[in-house]
Image (cartoon, helix red, strand yellow):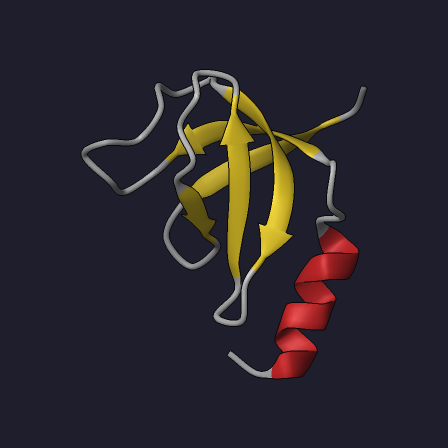
Length: 71
């Protein structure tokens, strides 16, 4: 992922944005429907979320599916 892609993700998904999990390709994924807040986007474009169930797994935009929640 290029720096410009990371910057684009930061604009699309600002820190503090609430997301809801639709699908995550990980056996330890939070349950579908779990919500959390974005707290970091790393150099490879993973979106790090503090999930409401205590999980800290990052979203991979190329594989996982989530939706933004307006609060």
